[in-house]
Length: 291
Image: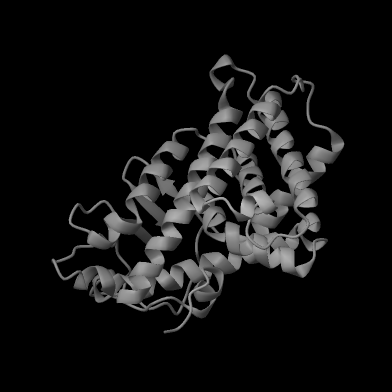
């Protein structure tokens, strides 16, 4: 603890990244074999799948009463694709922010409810629950969004809404969304199963080095159990040589997502200073203070 206190932020993050990498390598070399999932692992995956089904509606039918830019609605009242455009002042880009804040808040509520369904999460102290959610909610949202991402068209197909954010003129988009977009393309290419997605969500959620986590050893053990379950699932359901390194690729994607999360929070705070738009829940999760 004393050593961390005198280290720079960059050095601390580098050290944590090294620890995460060694942990991935250790799990990647574990001699599980392809003997199938244990009963405990099957129960773990069933609980995650049940939590996902209860808290994530891929049709977005309950996403209502959101603020919407005029460009989003057709003359007949139907909601159409939105491709952002911006002049140099960024006015059009900012006009989309309230809508995106509403969408983010809707997704964040789903992630919070997802966590509450998981028995291991409910057993943690409330302080650790809050710390884990504040650290992981954005990441879990991106994993969920990837399940509705169409890599052929570059759009997120959210029920009656779809979003295409590849406009090269988008100052807001380039600042905030370009790394996210690249991440979605890479993750989609892995063609993951639903079970692999929910296990990724659990691994992200149970990250012991989130700021404020007290029972780090407990959370670390839970994260490792979810990671080992993911590895066992892959070995059991993807025996082909082409998937030999899928587990390591997934863990690398989670590390990349962690980095994007940190960048996203910093950029979000800068945009909030220019154009306040965050909902109360977003302000709480990203520690945004008024004034």
